[in-house]
Length: 116
Image (cartoon, rainbow, N blue to C red; front, side, top):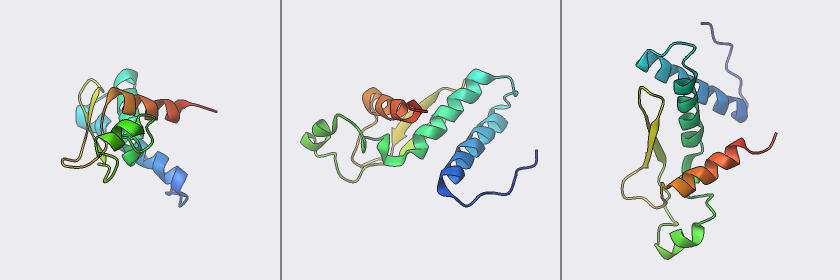
């Protein structure tokens, strides 16, 4: 496959990084082009880690709980492990603030898919 020249605007570069992450997972797990569930899982994982500290609580409605726990500073960056089924486990850097919970991840994912 021939890739077009990389654009220079940041929103399109972000999309290309997510695309390339998905392509790497496809190669690594030897997925075929019609394995849509697996590819979609890798795409969602790419979107979530691209959000950086937003997915670890930086843009989370439960921020008051983070403040009470003293985890509202030094937000850790997310790490995604994508398995052969396209499912991922999200984590964050050790000894950092923030959180990786169902609520914080869901909050960011809903933000990503809302709107036109």
